[in-house]
Image (cartoon, rainbow, N blue to C red; front, side):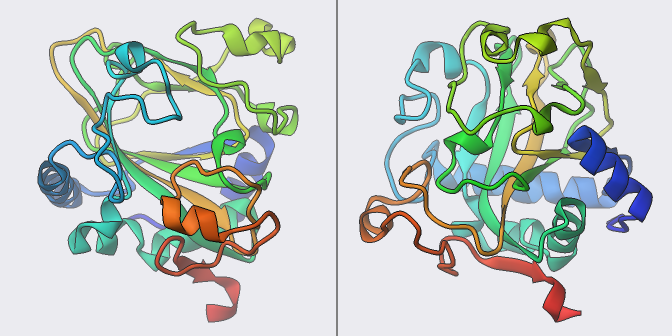
Length: 274
């Protein structure tokens, strides 16, 4: 893995809210990741979460419009909890260090991973921000998005609005079926040309959870497979939202509690470890 992060990359990420890293995985690593994740997804038999029987494509309380969103991508969350080989891959401390350095935080915990497979003729993902959906409120949360297949404009690449992470709010606007609905809240970005993330298999991007981003539809006869993980800065506290938290754990929390349960949000890397 190419896990080196330079000060120039940190500066670029902090300025734009995202960064694209070419050749994060070499071809042999891509093949291993893809095989491992495909097996883990198959073993889950369509169950979106480890703690429930909700199937991918069904309403889960997060995306209520299952008919539309079920055709955006197949989404399986927290594979690390149900597959020890995926855990080794996605919770690698070297990846945690990358996320810590880019976010300029003290340490990084896993929020949740997810396999995202945009099927042939899959619907677009409208413009949105991530962090307002999550169970903590932190401007430096971020995600890694790893291409397991070549990602093109035709098959549903990501698009980023540079600098938008400095303007977006923690208000939860949802993810609409209409591509541009979020610009009602952020009208100036309706006039900004986004940066297109066309990357080959093995490359990745990191984006701030407050950065406006979207993905086009898959206009091809093949899949677009990606593995992602959202990261939470260490020290983050519960804000009252359930999101991906299991019912029992959610019920045990009160607003302001530290989210430091190692079984749910393990610490992946911390600056004190050096």
